[in-house]
Length: 324
Ligand SMILES: NC(=O)c1ccc[n+]([C@@H]2O[C@H](COP(=O)([O-])OP(=O)(O)OC[C@H]3O[C@@H](n4cnc5c(N)ncnc54)[C@H](OP(=O)(O)O)[C@@H]3O)[C@@H](O)[C@H]2O)c1
Image (cartoon, rainbow, N blue to C red; front, side, top):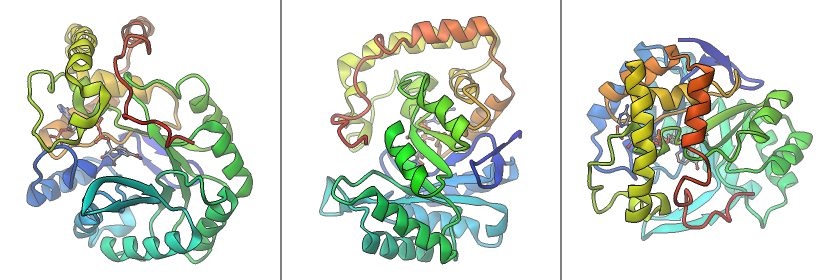
């Protein structure tokens, strides 16, 4: 697989791996199946794995910890802290970026991952109650201590990235980005390239919708996507029309909609490293083959017309005020 530079950090395969769904949010999980998929990813050239302390309340980091035993030095591991959750109230989302919180949660993540350092440590969301200077200084201290190798920001706007980057070099930014969510396309992504910061699109398959495989399925009752405006019945059926047009383009090329969606994301710049998620080897193989799909200029124009931001129904989250 082609390699891309993770900001001021190491080279990684151009398509990374999002591990979240292996623990929570997208229906039933199976650890043995997930571990087999992770091993298959590694054997296929994937080196960049993404998790967070909150995914499955630590389960996701522990699972990744099992996988990385014996191959830690060959992998680039990113995790995140800053979202406060409660097992008693799984819908609750607090935010804490205080120095004490980050120091404590970094140690807990390292223990679950069974490693002495992570390569990239993101603020999962920005805490309005903690000065950014204090949070970045706390992360810089973890870096000096050798516990983290690079600092990342997630769910952020350009002005926050610029402010943080002035305090300490930022390695990567992780925001939602796909044909469905193009907010960062024209300004933020080019700016990061100029700043030498990697852009890591999360949910690059639109949480599965862009694969065309969800339309015919009823999501399980506990599937997190049922809470998202984009997956509400009416929005879903209108968005399905856009996905049908994507399927047509993919069909003409003899590839799959997921591959076209990922190829479009990969085409946004050499500093863009998407992290599609799946629990299944079959989907993984399909997604990795997207690295070999080069879209034509005409196809790109057509896709961007189909996925005009005004044509996409429903916001990514019910309340987007966490973006800072
Ligand atoms: N920073 C943040 O706030 C944030 C938020 C969300 C996600 N993330 C990160 O981004 C990663 C990826 O995002 P995501 O998992 O939300 O969304 P995604 O990659 O856009 O989509 C994942 C969904 O698509 C399905 N899928 C994947 N490949 C497929 C294929 N080829 N054909 C059919 N279905 C396919 C998966 O099914 P199966 O699960 O059944 O295999 C899963 O339901 C996460 O794992 C997480 O690490 C970060």
